[in-house]
Image 1 (cartoon, rainbow over the protein chains, first blue to last red):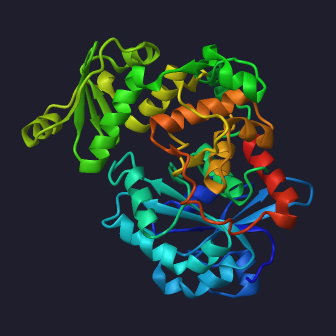
Image 2 (image 1 turned 180 degrees about the vertical axis):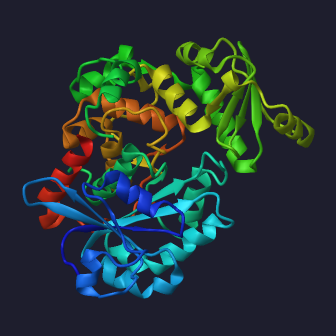
Image 3 (image 1 turned 45 degrees about the horizontal axis):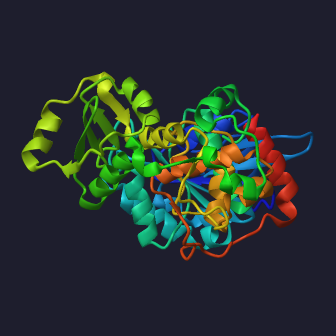
Length: 178
Length: 238
């Protein structure tokens, strides 16, 4: 899996909307490998459940960006470093209805700190229509305490516009003059 | 977000005005292109928002149409009247500046027990953003020094505030290094009115500053991926 192709990594806790977000923006039917291995995974790791999501954006005859959703469970964290190699940036999705979303934020930022330092981060907060608090302002305050500055948007992972906005913010954070 | 979607185009004239670009000096000196932020309801709402955010309590004020509660703890703006009236109030100059006060515990409990009618409830972030845009109507705050760079404290919640063209580009630039209004328009190759609109929306949300000390050095440049990233951005904008 050590692709050096262009890729964007989606991470966050189980249920935060990684699979849905990738499906919203992907040009292909996303491959969900948290079930039994698909064709692609069986070629690489036969009969293994590797627990990640895969999608793709095609925007030219030969150009594409891979979208990888990390397994949400911590037991798969050994895969995260491999997945992030060569990545353009990180999309962190957080579920506002989870018991401690700020702990989730701290956990994933810490786990991906090295990758974030060398690329860029955007944060999407899901399920805010089910639970309005904490607010986006509070997420920003938490991130400041972690010496972290990144776009934080409320998102519905089912909406392409929301996921697109996150990725656009990620790209423009790398170079505002794109 | 940065592209010319139909929704963005529909909002353009309403939220950004239709003024043509002007040379720096002319833009700075034209009184028709200025307005006094402090004489508009948006300044009172921002004050209520800041007080509420500091003390984590709802605040309230009385305007000509009735009571407005600014609840930063839930990102809500609650009106005793139909919130659709806010749009016209945003465009008017204040006769007398309403006073802001925090709600006591009893009032907070009442607010939660007897919520205002649905027509009186708006998202606070979007309401402030729109208040900034509609109050300004494409003009600049009277005290804004056009020669000074503008920095962003943090990005607005761009997926939930009224869309304006190129908002993400301006946000990214002012988060990365800051630039004056006219320099921003030139650097990004966009109309001044879109930069001015973003400035006014961000001002209402207390997101702009002329102090760039919080800006971290760029971690990574687009470098050789620039072409690919540009094409990807174009694909996302279509």
